Image (tube, rainbow over the protein chains, first blue to last red):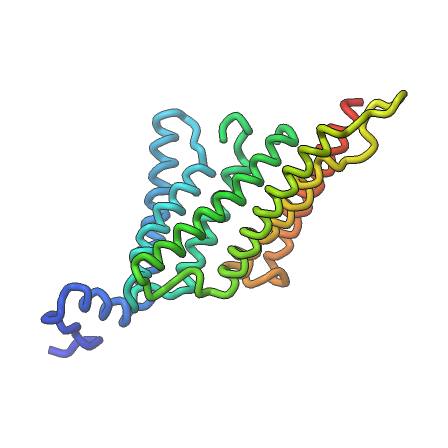
Length: 110
Length: 144
């Protein structure tokens, strides 16, 4: 049976399978980070809208950014998971979220 | 938007948050001997160092400003102090800190100040600067 790509060497451990998958499809780690970001962002806003009728968009953007930073940092430990550019972009998204959040809040809310 | 205190605290919190995120990411990489380190990116490292410099400058200027507030006098027949010196750190250091912070997203995501989206951040910085100026004027002169 022929495959579209070389099968990973499954005898060398689970991380080798993941790294091989990521090397075949380099955008995979970015998509995982995007999934985490959008799940927290859209999920949080939706739940808050259902519960209270209003949503704190800037706060959820900041929380989603921080939730994305954690897997991004874990990806950065080993080679082959994430490019440095994407790590910087995640940090930059955090900073943009913080700018939005703090300029959006009243001084009594910070 | 409410007051000068609110705007100053907001921008200060943005500066502190960016330093905290950078510090956490760099120390995480150092502790775990990570292959990818935020500090090894030239733009990120320079932004982090500029932020540290700006923050230490901010704390020095805050002390000087506090002294200048204590020593300020209002002349006879005048409603206000002669200069806006007590507001110096909030207008100088915080605006340059904000510009430094915005440099990283605009370089890494939008492709630099000359990019088509660069005008958005230029306008955002301009309105923050403008608001600071208006608030200072309002604080010095009071409501008309």
